[in-house]
Length: 451
Image (cartoon, rainbow, N blue to C red; front, side, top):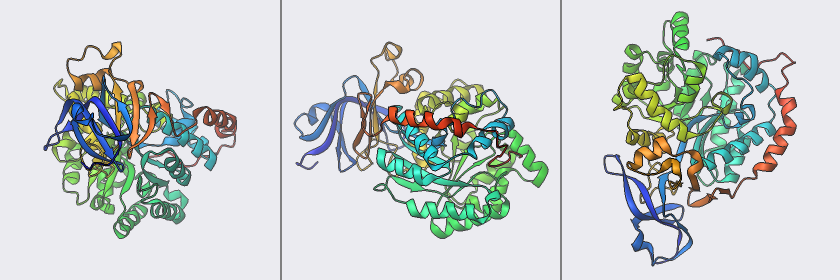
């Protein structure tokens, strides 16, 4: 380490670390030294006592964990939290969500993004992958609030070529923005709303401009069955035929994967393919299956954790997604030894970072990695005593136990106090706009859900 002042030292905490094989472990009574937005070192706490720092945090009784990544969400949809409850997927889209989304103005999207970012920062999420409309406003909020984000402007084929062009323009305009904290993707909505020609054109653009692609596919088994009936191919096979498995691709949900047909297709993919799983939404919609995490792991496909939008999930809590992923996978596999707490933490850190294309820069607290980390307080009665630190983090800790959130070495929240966002002002203005936003009397829909 150099002799000049560090920017930040967090000392006295346990630190979640990874060995050379990426396996999760913990270093007790340690200190994290941050300089220039990067983790410079993880040392014993006593060795940090004599080091000078611009800012120092006492982490005793807390665990430093790599910042969580929400690998698939629609952040502005927090404005629709609770407006479409207890409905099947088709009615949820056609009767409520898509009519409301036809009212969206850029200001609605901005306010929703502000509220969402505040919720995520308070829940220990340092990076999110978003796929929505009016994304210039989301990029501006990310720039202001200090988070990291992987952003794409969503489009449907019903919008014509202009939709795809806007998605490309957004991706090129914002790539590397916010001092490198923003990465971008092309964002076709899904194979059932984007036709084969547009999917193929998207793959061509991704190759030409070196962009990844983020979309929904095989969200549930009904979509897979409908695709087979209409096209003779599963949604995953549609993506392969369009060339999208030859580029870097993030697939949201994939609970409808056909194991016999789709897993061999994914295994031979030429691009870096990843999947995001959001188990709370699947349970809420009553879908019969979940993301086949074990099978995807077996063929080398990283599975990141996600929440989806709060309109379907009611929450942007990735801690809950981590616990539910472990529990739902145990149930789906009929095996209590899968998914273990340490495996869940691996998905929440290393694999989530890989899923959004940031596996070389975030997802671990280690020298040379960006300083995206959170401190979790385990002193509460619901987390004591601690017999197994991994199990306590996954199955006992809650988002509200996050005390401090750091991105690129900048403290966005300390002792539960947000430093970069004004929540009361955001809520006040959003509530004023809700009547116009929620009006469905016009009878319009932004799109039709018909798989």
